Length: 362
Image 1: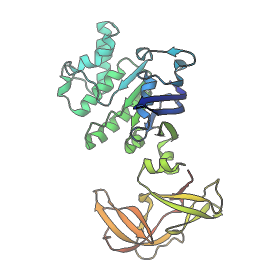
Image 2: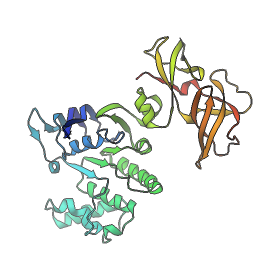
Image 3: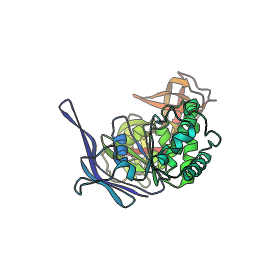
Image 4: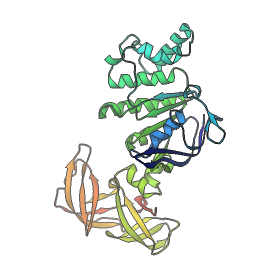
């Protein structure tokens, strides 16, 4: 089901100061999508999630879930959390340590006084779905971190909610387990065809899991769209910088010819994909992602965007080398193939395809 958030604001008062956690957020979360709220700590993403689930009350605006208004200041409407038909998975999982797996998953149904045979059937079905069949009698605290995460997911799913919300549920897992669980979670949610709202500050998690990503900052939605669009075609400098490591270079528009916008910057003259809404002489920011900077040996074949530089640093990280290259007065962050033979101090030339040179003005 769809979620509509209309002009929602939320304030906190501390030490004589008023902090605006949410600033007139206006947002539609489509049905049956994995919708991720991505942003730095303190940007308001968890506050927004808690307002949707009913654990926080906004100071203004309206929230509608599946066609029903569940909160409105003007209409004096507040639907309690337990009546909103939502499932929730917390960062800490909130698993009951004194209960086994079955009782943890069954708890939401037991509190609703549902018949025992119905509870047994629903719990068994849900545990099979999250691949924990046979774990019913295991103490919850004896499970691995990934298994505990699946118990928390099963407990959120067992009541068959139409919307499920996640508050950074993978942040307590180690890196390898986080990757494995992330893949499982996307598969589970895709198979369920359920509306999922996911909160994280981890951009890789957001890109890997989501069908739609909304980037937040200072209580506002800055930009939203499919992961590839957010990564490759963001229109805000903050989004470009937050969604992945990038080189941001101040530039001035020099020409607009056909499919190319040419700018002057510390690298020299750079041909970029065409940018509308700007004119010659305008100040812009050139965004170069390190994975698109191609080191070349000998003479580069392309006629545009060929630059000379010197390798300043290199660090081996397994799947690549990361480092810096100096070009005139500029320093660029680069990624180099792990079998590359370049070394610190080498003079090299490199190219960047104009299609991968993004210009932003905000």
